Length: 321
Figure (cartoon, one colour):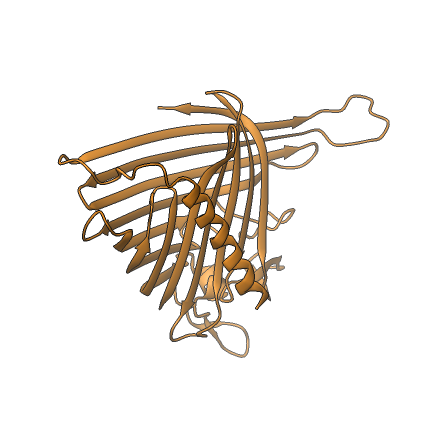
């Protein structure tokens, strides 16, 4: 009940902001000519701490986060087609420690929608989403056995539904009763361990693999998303996006959550600060602890599903290209 009240509060606040902009004429789909709108942004956030004879102690460290975002959006009358690619990669180096990864994302989104006329704010929409990563992930300081790799996992969502979108580029509520979710684990060692919800390998009494684990897990269920962005104060921009997904056939009612909130503080056209929060929960994703064995083969211990949370704070440069 508390979760329901909280979600209703979030949606109410968003619709309140949207209504406050009601004096703006919605010209999103007016005009008789097709139009492409492209936008490309590159960002680099850097933070550094250095100590010299600091009697309170401390470790020197430096972190960097590189991001590239590209959009290509098409509009014609009552039809839209929005596409974007997001790439992020971050590293951290602390004194007397190896280089460590702090962020790793490759994401592709595509959304196609159509409405009957300019009087309605409801669209028939189809959505595609794909995510994976570039490099191996580890439970530091263990860098021998990877707990994630490129396309392990990889996620693909595709579905059709209805979407409310008054000023759809700023406020969107999407409901799809028919969305497929495919989870890819294309590393056999991780697939054998049943990582990210795929079916694990079948072993004999001695622990030898009789049948390899499956590398793809397919689901079919309900997807609800909400996205909203606004300028909450002068040069302070908020972006909110949350996804809820449940599978019809496997554990219906167990809800996967992916929720991001980002605040961008614009200093000028080239300098900005960013504060972000990313919360995830997937009941099928069991936390794996990589362990080393005497024969140096990869081995994993399952610790169960957990809430995942990440917070980002950085200042850096932004370039449009």
